[in-house]
Length: 160
Image 1 (cartoon, rainbow, N blue to C red):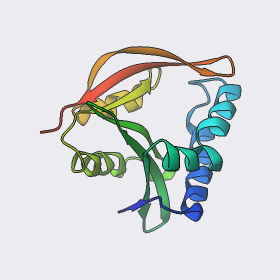
Image 2 (image 1 turned 90 degrees about the horizontal axis):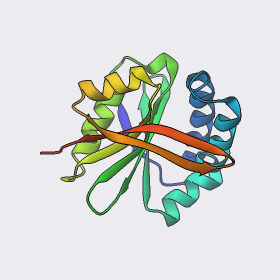
Image 3 (image 1 turned 30 degrees about the vertical axis):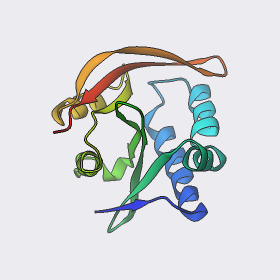
Image 4 (image 1 turned 180 degrees about the horizontal axis):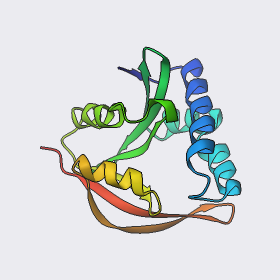
C-alpha cells in the first residue's frame, strides 16, 4: 500500500472520482440521495477539494495498492487537534487494513489528539474506529447548507 499526497490537479481529479464512486455506493440508506449529491458538489468536487487544499490547509492523501487507487483521506490541523476530515475506501478494497494503515500514517504526523465525526447510523465505521482506539466523546448535529444536517458522533484518539 502506498499513501500519496494530493498535490496537483490530476490527483485532485482522482479524489473527485473516488468520492463520487464511494459516496454513491456507501451512503444511500444512511443519508438521502439529495444530501449525497449536495455534499459531493460542495465538499468533494474538484473546486471544493482544490479550495480546501489551497485556502483551508487541508492535506489530502490517496491510498494506492496493486489494483490502483483504493481510497483517500484528508486531515486539517486545528489548534488542539488534528481533524480527520475524510477516510473513504472503495468497496472492493475494504477489509484489507487500508483504514488502519491510514490512521497509523496520520498518527505518525502529529502529537495532537486525532478527532473525527462519523454518521450516527454508520455502525460499521463506528466499530472500526473503536477497534483502532477511538473513543466516542459526544454528538454533533451540524447544518451544512442546502437544508441538510450531518447527525454525527464525535470521536477522538489520543496520540502518544
